[in-house]
Length: 342
Image 1: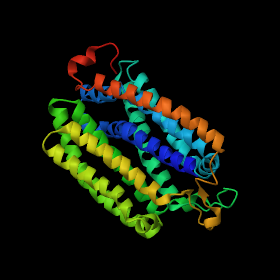
Image 2 (image 1 turned 180 degrees about the vertical axis):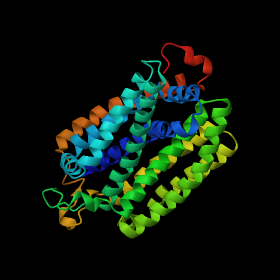
Image 3 (image 1 turned 45 degrees about the horizontal axis):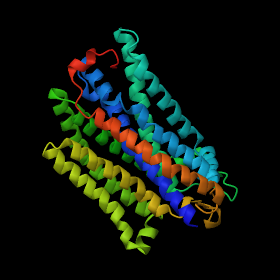
Image 4 (image 1 turned 60 degrees about the horizontal axis):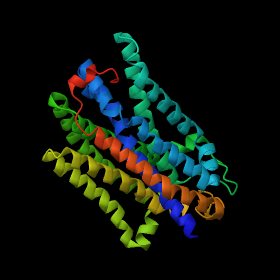
């Protein structure tokens, strides 16, 4: 039982780390058409993401791999039920990765506009559909005892799922605007800071609306009411939001960005804490729920994976921290002349 609990926490932590890291890439990529007023602005924003975006997506591979290896029944049921939105995420991320490299291959405005469009689409769609997928997990699916979805895909298009989609989108947009604020100077910096301030208000409304919708449309709050100490999780989301606002006002932009990381991490765990011990609730009855106990791999598999994770995850974290510190300074116009720049 302890192994399954540990792996549930690690699984949630890996997704939270992915959303904290790649979330600002997705947000920044979506904001390029609104923040960039010139070709130079576009290149600066791309270069704020350039040194770290591919490393950030390693966490997606890790989180997806852990989902498959630790909870194979859950992985199979989730992907078969939500095949379309998950494939949209996959192909959008592929387009986004390609656009980083292809945009600079030909010095032609029409060519660059094509890849600017794929950058926007490849950033916007994953941000939106990740929210839809996780909101669907929080609400549950009509899966039977074999994990097969027994309802049309259209049944997933409801108000709660749409609210979850836009909630995640605005989390990432705020995170991206803060990242651009951190990594730029001059007029672009001021413009990004103004957008971050505006998006903060939308984010605050979004999180309150999503919590209210979760109360009325899901049973996530049962665990919270049974153990009131768990309300610390959503409380920390509010602390992160308030901290973001305060530090942004003082122009302590790194601190504001770190508070945004706290908001994203605790917003992710808000739903997961409410789900536990379930991974995917079933609308057809509790007996059909996929839980950490009936959907997990064998104890031996979980033990071997845990040994590997305890060794390699700290190494990956240390490497990524080093990369962020190495490129912590703002992107300047002079750096755009470097051959390796985007």
